[in-house]
Image (cartoon, rainbow, N blue to C red; front, side, top):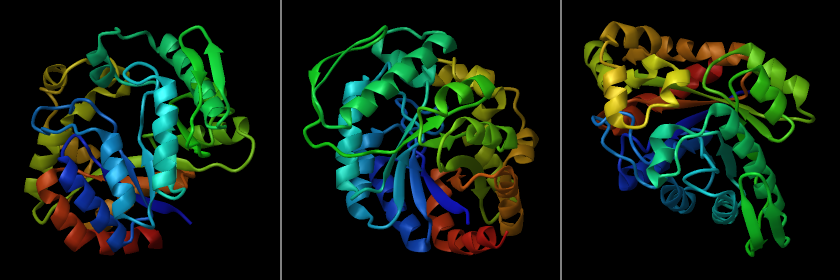
Length: 319
């Protein structure tokens, strides 16, 4: 049976609102909640970027049932792996074992802010592999000293240690072969069966395959398309481009020729819950065990949770 999740979209909502949405999402029946971990929104019209880990700490106390996850954190530039290990263990204890640490190689948008530059994808993946190894070592609660190619850890110990499952974001054969043996769960943003099959081939044991899809429910289809275009047209460049753009201004420029019809062709918009549910089907057909929904637009968020989320979940579970 597939689990369906709700995305705490830090780029489009403030911290207090996100905690309230998290409570409402649990109450209407979502199985898990994932949070983006951004320093900047993609577009200035989104207008938010609170610190994900503070929000998740509050959500851990405000909820009791839903699983929680980062989707995803880069543990190698803006953060260092020793710090990520500490806060992940703390959040696991606060949530009473409900947390999955989602990790990836990062986006320039969020990582350039500390002034350390933006490495090539090959270097970023080397850094991610080393960071995951360090985090695993620290989560044992033992004293760790590490001298690697990219990171040093000097006599560090997580005093409030906890075992934290790790999900790793992958996008192709090479990254799957490299990271499937290191991770507990697969994270991906495209419904490709090849990703799931490749992960299963290279990973020992059971694992979850966690996907994510944007939707824009709204009582008026035209208005919902306009909202999705205003807030989510950044996706049009694809991740190969999006990972390297450094600022919201860059995303504005890169997405200036993305039309509303381009957005509506890629994102289910409007009041038709059957159409929205069907847009999720490719993830189910590809073998994903978990799918997180991104409801686009803060101004529609509470109304979506109040009016549409529960019947939508019923339709999704009936697929």
